[in-house]
Image (cartoon, rainbow, N blue to C red; front, side):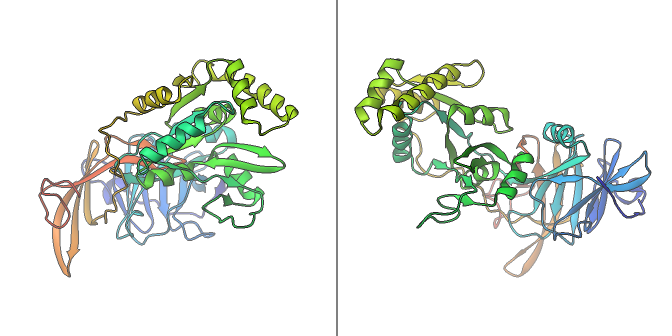
Length: 401
């Protein structure tokens, strides 16, 4: 953590107190979480992102912590609201849609873990998102067990409900491969740095190149309103289980090891040496797949249709399931905030909204009582609604449509 330039710390109680909680506003604003003072604003000279400083009481000066996560871009008007003892909500007033709510985590489990790893003060940014997303689904099983067929059936029957994350790799693109579609192609030093910052759920080295699933790639699927399916091996599932991702873990196994060998031999696609290697790997995966605490559900694929029906039931799907994209992230323009007050988990916003050239005043409530997720991914579960029905922005019941 480096030393920051001297900064005149105003009496926050006088300049920012609102009678309910400590709320501050400005291009460069300060706030207090617990007994620690944080300065948030135009302090990052190296980028065009919002910078952070921490006041070190023992040294009696401002210092720069290590800042993890995707940093929000600079804003000329920030509101900073402490939320509990572990984070600060930051509202970028007048920002573009979907870039207006952020959380600066200062004492969450993720931040505490990173402090131990890095040996320095750490804070982490997490983007705030309205609404929820379905839990990602991790599906593992040895080669030849039929998990690919089960996933294909799921995608065919429910094409708008599920999606795949795009993996990262350090290898060079092959002919006709497109960056961001087939893979996210990246430099090794960049990916290694992101792995160190725990931006990857799982990774492995294959033939000298790194491959992995990033937190962001899973979040992008959720932003589109789909549940992300991760088709990964048992070792990858272990890494994801140890991460911050809240997912459903399903292991697909054959009726017996002998049955799996018959299936692999029937395919006739490999030499005997290659087959024996797959069988050795499969034996290890079958043993690990039944390890306590790793997988939530173990399905035996002795009958494909029966196994698929069980899989659907586990995921809450049936013949009446809605196959439309109901959970897509709402693209809501956040109101231009004029004043803020906070009581418990509800934030009251007085705003001015321009509708067809006419400015009108309105009051909103931002409910932060059911937050999910957090750094290094999104913070979901925010709910914004108007205090009084407002035709252009609500569905008639005060909820934003």
